[in-house]
Length: 476
Image (cartoon, rainbow, N blue to C red; front, side, top):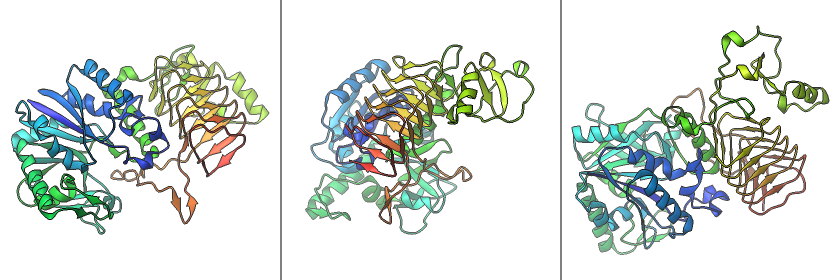
């Protein structure tokens, strides 16, 4: 028997996720078409012997969270319960506080997953490693480059036994290129060190952490209070993965996580990906696949995206090609394309046939996409409207927002270095030297963008109605 615990935090966290976290709790924000923590629950439900999934956090059990829990229980046929902390208790305090619920029924082990990570969740491989060599703590680790490793918990392992010899959370100097993924497998014995930390905190009275905030005895930090203290004592081991992994700390990292999950859907949920069909929107994948025997010989190079061009001659070219497609300089009839682009479209969304989507686009419930719209590397949330011929690139369009005709909403991605296989998303900072750094564009809830304007590298807070173009600004 197995259980899983998902640590979802609380409203005092996720400030870097604003303004998106104003409308829904961060763990329920849609990533690749489904709430962020649904990816965790799906992975846990696929592990044989999983009996219950517990969510621990400090959010109020409001209607969206309650509705999500009910839907998850029905979909996965598993008990999915939310346990609310009486105060923010850190990454380990909730585990100790709810230890009786976690250990009820006598599970052989339980997974612990942070909600703000994106991964392919190799839980079955972790379970096999644990059963082969049982230990109280098993951490999932991956590799990072020397510079970025300083932003994570760093693990020094014994390469033969994979025991964690040394653990440092966000070191000031290089320690190791193996980092903590925030995904664990604990045996019931793992709660004993948490009890020891709790009792020590009680004896010491009120403690002051590095941020200057007072915390009570119930606050336990897994990384600093447990992993660092027990490293090298034969209790903590690491399981390395080379699969997809990223943190989801900011809106930009949510967009990157959406890309990773959409790519993963090719293997795990191909039914969620929109498919190209005659009379439907054109879906651009990262690897278009024209049928060779139907393609004419290569012609002189033409723009790969004529719908983004703006001169009168180019607009005329676009109208002439409305029933066809251009791929890398090759003119191909739309009927001769077989595409599976990384695009998610909610069944209730209305997408015009002449829209061009992808790669890496997620379109939410009740969204309207007008004629000639171009969408790439973007998330469009519930009830938004993109009017005719709008262009949305590297952006998140908020709930119920509207983008006027011929408007352009564009951001600048902060993707990992594609030439470094160990690179991850950098911790994003909005400002540098007093200036707003270029980043993805975010439109908050119910924002109105007029026709024929440019919104570039900007953040628009909810319920704003703009009247002109903006570049590199936060619009309050």
